[in-house]
Image (cartoon, rainbow, N blue to C red):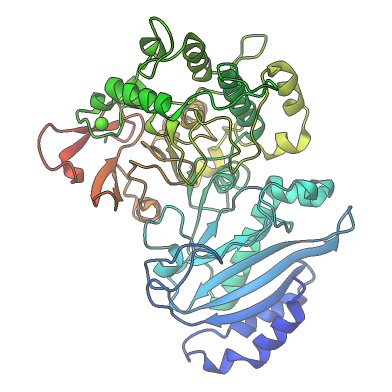
Length: 526
Ligand SMILES: [Ca+2]
């Protein structure tokens, strides 16, 4: 951080006298800057006053938080500052929020994309309207070892240590630094440590369980980016299958595979076949595992019309929802589930049936063919990708032997990483670790939800942190999680431990969670 000296001066001269008598002095952590062993430099320390509800933003351009935030000391730091192979300055940048009224716990806040920015350490993910900081957690966030203004700028990987830090190393380094700062600041260590992340943060949460089994007592992993090389092949494959059915322009470039009315037709048919399987036709497909929608039933008997799909469209849909395989017949990546979000076109990443337009993930993909075997060879030969991925490692014996607990969640309409892939990892981890995995781990599918949130008809607001802490510290294993939404009308719905799902009891207010019961085999007995 280039502002380091100025901020240190400000910290020394500034607000320290204003701190309450019972509150540790933020500036005392500055002595850590001289510790040569950790190569840890404190670059800033600032006491942040308590803030009223609705006045703190999730990020500089984010949404206002509904909860009030407590007074806290914000420490900024840099670990291992150096000049990298490409001549750029590197360090693991981090911020840690140390609330005046501390609850004795640490929360590591996972990142997103390719990281490169230090998001405000608030702990908003999977905490509904009560971020971890508002509950008294000390919260740390990090750029994972490089600076970037672009979400998918890979140039830092030219530097070996920066690549290692992104792949995994910064997680351990930052967590140890956070624990050290906490112990120095409060004069006692955190009694429990937690980790929550989604997407890249979900991958980092998996890393925490797999490669740093001693660091965390409880972990939440949402929609983990566990093997992006493979998922990128899958989404490219799906788009190519759909492009083959699209109408081409004069240059041969494919437009959208489906018109708006085509997508409405598909969405209506999927609901007709699968919405009611959970006992209630409400636009939510809660029993997706039993959804057996077949596109052929929408095939035109004659010419293409508004009420049917062309033969090419049906063929493309079948291919798009079938797992791509390599030449040897091995599945490269699981298929995506039929869910309500497959035709979504909202503000987030559009549903996987939306082609012919650029998305937040990149420019319009107009490819008409894809060589799956060539692509998979490139991914397998990519050393950084291999080190970064978390799909293969399932030995969690050290983490589980320590009593570690883990909660997973994934939106069923996530168009980037298939919810089926997280289910697949969960099954493999269960097979590898035996009953102790199932007694220490839960997976919750979120019908209709997109990538780490969103979803037009989804109950996507839920608090997993409370359940995780109760599990770790009171041995109260979670069963159902009460999820809610505020629009179109406020309503609640249970999330059930996978593979069970919430089934309508047949009577009762459908806005109330207790009108539903978890059905189907569940390790949690839910
Ligand atoms: Ca339903």
